[in-house]
Image (tube, rainbow, N blue to C red):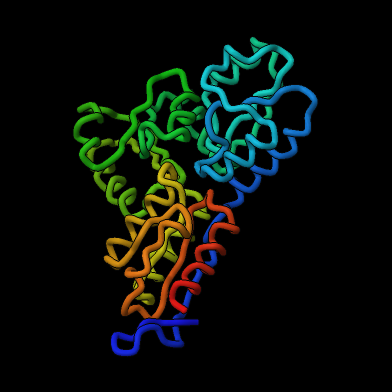
Length: 294
């Protein structure tokens, strides 16, 4: 492996450390496997949006024959609807049933646990709040599980804006890929505002592991490369954490995005990747770094 020496240029010694948790999580891999299996069906298979947030994966799934649409009403009866890893609202499932569609559920099991929590707590009379990105598919699927309107809290400022004064009972769940440090700060503030607060830390275990590793990698390596789609929420979080620790951190979609000057004066590079990033892409990035520093 190679490293850069200010006097002699690139020299032997560059170290490349790939995070153990980099790449596909269980839920993403499961969704992709289900999608590939369903593509072999004789009847048409459709999905509302992307199966996961990665352009290469989506391209592969579409190449296998699964069609992406925006409006479920355009699907003919007898076809199948593939529910993505992020899950879907109850209304979408009911609509699919009314159209006589076969529902193929690829929702991440950990996301389904969040769905169960909000349905149960809504029935018990608790107002439901979700800490997460309002427009994210997972968050929209969560709020779409219940009859009453849920509150979506994107940041600390939203607590003041959106939590009604005098609210007595509140249950809180968390988008599975949120930043743990931010969530814990929000939990502390909510405890002071709501007397009966039921807080469910539903950040999934793969996200916690990825975030634990990315809090260590930037301290041990001169440059950090975070790989993933710009539409990936969990990749965004990994990049934000890395950047806050090591300014020489970069978010790339593929090896083509890497610039040679990022690695000048660097003796080691740390690599991690979002939960929807294929291993092939990670290996391509690693090989590219080895090549351009040779």
